[in-house]
Image (cartoon, rainbow, N blue to C red):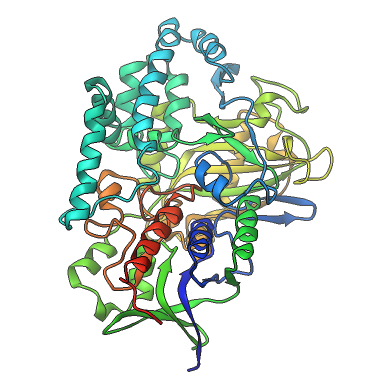
Length: 538
């Protein structure tokens, strides 16, 4: 066993939050090394060629939640990042040749919704106002450190700050926040609207990456989580990163290297090294030990504490709860190479139109989404899956040959735990066939236009990206795993249960999505501890 030179911080996992954390730590004067097991950094936010001439985002596939402060601080635009807004928020092909378009303006959406319900069209302005009131409360907390319940004076002051913030908003806003944190998305939307298409358009956000029915209590928060972002200053908007999601992490890598961060790829951590003083570094798969004053994990907390940290150094009750930390997205991810754009029965044509450049949601009602969940719970796979189709090549001609296209298919619900006798490696191609057939029901030319496909089952997502249970959020966004309880009460402030061990991934506040916020917040706490001598000197 050899001993390499000492670092101030080793970051395990070169996903986007790990890179963000590394950038801020380096700016604070620390000597930082990022260790990534794959050949390139980026984690789930990467772009790859999956068929000759066809490139696309591999897992993460669309942009909104990336924090504006992070974009500015890390100079991502200067490093080539460009994000373009979707012309429509969503497009829903519906049965009987109908459709619903959400966006680009409130008036346009009202005109669309009025075809199904004039009452719902009139409700839209008030609904958006309510959503924004609740979103602002969450948005204001994104770059804050949650208080550790039962902690010391600092945590008490942090909790009081949150209490004062809630006091500053009126009672109507407080009720809105309570609704979105505790109720189901279905109950919230049913209280506002009567027509199924608009409830489906909004309700889809409640099940993205969330293995649950839209009528599961707490799913309204997942809906809220997906509207707190922005694109180029426009709140609630979603967009495409030119060059795919890898353009984000490649820009972060450039800034990290500019700040002196050492990045090592094709290098896997086997174990976190711990002695009586706390964490002292990491041991690699080849037996080498890298010494450091602290270790920062960008991994799912469940993976960190059940696989990399020696069990005998952890409290038994803590370890039991980590084993029970909820991870399951029900997500099935596909990329397809297309010879032509889909021609929808409700919107014919293979030349690029606004709906091709937007989020195309195949799920006409909340009931459809709920049944997809019930099927997955009992059968393993939805008989009629929920599918969101994005075709980024309509705005980015670098992704596919001229006249051809790539599409991202984000599909739910597919249970990470299949019924006895079934294995994902054996059924994923038939599941992919089902997804293709589902889209083809609305766009008859779709199946025959597919030149190639790349398929990631929930098991593939776990094996390739460390997304335990295929969970794209590094842990379910449920009330028992949010804010001061993420990942666990007592360890919400990005600090682990061992001295010199920190967490910077999506399993910490504010949760999943390509945000950069956990990496930003963790770096602030780590630098705070270095400045106050809480991390042992080299």
